[in-house]
Length: 171
Image (cartoon, rainbow, N blue to C red; front, side, top):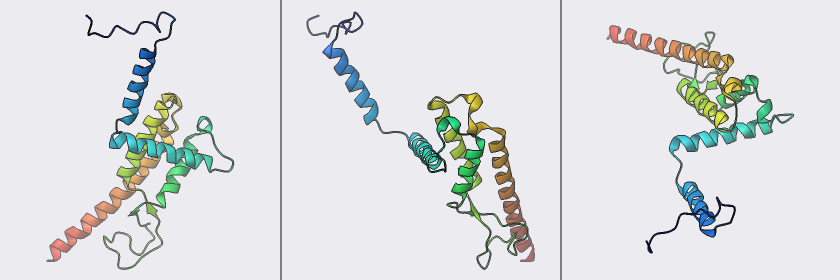
């Protein structure tokens, strides 16, 4: 028994134990030193970006005041950094898989990226103390936004495939 470390019960009995405090510190440091998974890192980055977006609003919006409208505004803001172009029906390049020239149709976040982002932010909201019932990332308006983006991308993909099929028939 001389080689064993006695259990750290001093703190539980009202006294202080430097051994308990140091082991708690070591455990905390080990948890902080462990690298986050790619998902956790991205979730943290997304959460911080959304928080910064809210702070930059005029007037600034606190997380407790955040609602689905703020989330929709944030998603529209992110669209400018997207790489997916969904041509409007009025665009002369609508339905063309590789337009010969640039057009004024806006860029968007791809549906898959949007879906993953919303999922990460929804999880982060609840991890930061938000209630699932009040989670603005899970509101019906956000589901509609995702559905609209998906359907618009799907229509473009369908048109691209249809155009490719016609080219195959010609050859």
